[in-house]
Structure formats: C-alpha cells, structure tokens
Length: 438
Ligand code: S3P
Image (cartoon, rainbow, N blue to C red; front, side, top):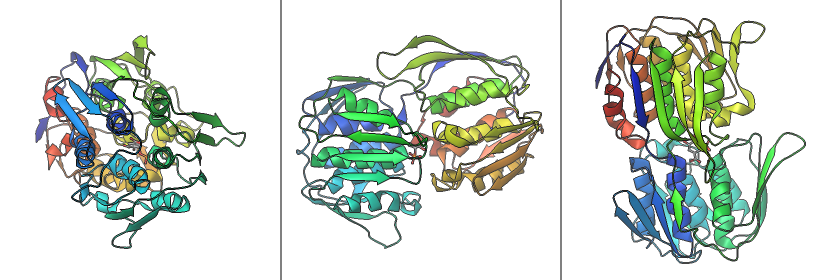
C-alpha cells in the first residue's frame, strides 16, 4: 500500500465498524446462553470471524444475515466436541477467553492460532485455570499455543493477576461460569470490563469493586441460569475511531466526526490523552442504554499540550494504560508532533501484543525520521519532528499498519506499507475510509 502525504485540510464524518472486544464476547456469551441472541453492529473482521468459526466447530448454529448475526445458544452445557483443531487465527481474545470455556467442558480439544498467536504468552491463563483444577498444557512446553485442553469440572478460585488483562480476567470468569463455580479475579488496575457488563445482561451474578489498596476485583457467583437478553447492539470501536481522531489532530484545519463510538471508561483513555495534548474534542449525543457510546467530534488545534508535568514532559503511565493499551502505537505517532518530550511508561504489555509493539513502532518511526527510543515499558519521544515517507514493515500487526498509515498522511513524500492487508484483523475497510480524507 502506497500512501502520500496530504496538507489539505479535511472535514469528514464516518461510522467506524463494531467494537472488536464486544463482538467476540457477543458470540461467546450468546453461544453459552439459553435462547437466541441477535447481534447488530457485529465486526466482521478476521479476528471475530475466527471466534465465530470456533463456535460453529463446537456445534453452535450461527446465522449471518448481513447486518444481523443470530447465535442459537446451546446453554452452559450444550457445546459439543470439535472434530478438528480449533483455530483462533491471530486473535488473543479468542485464544484466552476460549481456553477458559474449553477447560470446563466434558470433552477434549486443541486450540491454536497463527505464528503470532503461537508466540504469545498463555501461561497467564494456564496458571489460573490449572489452579481451578483444569488439565491444560502447552503442546510445545513453551507456555504458548497449541494448547491441549482436556475439559473437566473446575472448582472455585480467588486469583490475583500480576497484569491488568481483560483477557485473563474474562478467561477465569468464563471458566467459572461454565463450571458453575465461583471465581474472583484481582488485577492491579482496571482492565476493560465488557465481559462483566455483558455477563450482567445475561443474568449472571457478578460484582466489581475497587479495593482499598487500589487494586480491582471482579467476582462471579455460581451460575444457575444464563439467559440471552435477546439482542446485543455493538457500538463502534474506539480503537478504530482513534486513527481518524489522530488524523484530524495531525492535519491543520481538519475536522472529523466519528459517529456512535463506544466510550466505556475502561476503554476511553485515548480521549483523556488527546485532551492532555490540547485537542478540541467533544462527545455529542451520548447514549448509555447498553455500553456507553457517543459521537466524537475533533477539530484540529495547535497542540499546546496543557497536560505536561512540571518538567514540561507529557507522561502517560499508571492506571490509565489498560484503558488505552491498543491506542499506544497511534499515541506514539502523535507524540512526534508535540512540542515536548513524551514519556510512555508502565506499558510492558506492548511487547506481547500481536507483535512487540515497542520494538516495531520504534524501528518504523525511526525510519520516518522520528526521535524515539523504546524502553523496557514504553517509549521516550522527543517532538516535534518532521516525518518523511519510508518503507514500513508492520510485522503483520494491524494496529502498527494503521498507526503508520496515519503518520504517512502527515509525512513528506510517499510511504509504502508492506503486508498492508493485515488491517483485516480489526478493520477491513480502513484504507478505503482513510483515502476519503485525501
Ligand atoms: C482485549 C483485551 C486487551 C486488548 C486486546 C483485546 C479483550 O488485551 O489489548 O486487543 O478483548 O479482552 P489484554 O486484556 O490482554 O491487555
């Protein structure tokens, strides 16, 4: 994919595709429920289609009628043994959440994924599941997929996770749900709470609390009944919206309106950071009937960075990190345009995403002329710098490709993005929409 710079201001309005995290969960929870679930706004990207294929392989009937997906729920004990290895593709959410579900079934299965998935750490789910009595092993003994899972009834657990991870938390909650036992998961900061919100709408008894020491606990009681609410409406994905908000931040005179975006506070850290950079951003038509959502309008302004500390640095770290973890590649690009130093810290998790995002962003932004250094848990970026076109290798990581495609709009000359179609993981229409800005 070749992308040329643009200096022409744009005014553009768009709707981004459905939220990836919520789309995965809508299939999973719908499959485990009694009754049918009609999903609107479902994200038909490679990751969510992997989840769909896995559940079909477990005997769940899922109808795709274009705008509406209908999952015919099997109930908590209705999945059947798959006839083949389950393939999660590139999806960490599929792999980790399904591990919890499969560990509690009365059949054995093998779960794997692509080369990236086979390198990502699964010990973080193997350990708590084993502590619940599960029989789950890494086939190669390296703590990664393929995972051999011999399902069985699990028992109660109180687990403290060293990382704030919604995937780990949801894996344990789903394992407990399927085994009819109780579980509590304590994490150092609050990770996205889509599972907890959706579990509530299906009638589960789940509570989340902030503890006096600043940690967070989500606890589920043994489930007797798990019934579909009938309909799930998936809002637009704030992680996809972030690329377009950032584009308007970077091109003077521009204005963007992204409609119907999920602004769940456990996901919306990007909005706080954009404000700290000096963005003129507003949320309109806020709607809180399901997951909170709103239309987001951003008008380009000079980036004055009112959120700098007393040293003049913009520091992004601490408990906001889980609420913007997937947006950090885009934030790193924006930081190259700020008249200050940006320090991104407490984000070592970036190393174990679809790629090592610290290494891959540093390598590629350097090629574009940025003053950036990767650290053990983030980046240090000195701005402002003029970016120039370069040949980008996103290492098959969708979020790196999209972040650098936006950087390319504001860079001098032409940028070539290798393996550009990796964006299909979360946003198949991304380039078509981006080209509308030119
Ligand atoms: C996700 C949780 C996050 C996020 C990922 C999707 C989810 O991962 O990075 O893209 O749907 O639960 P962790 O929870 O492992 O940080």
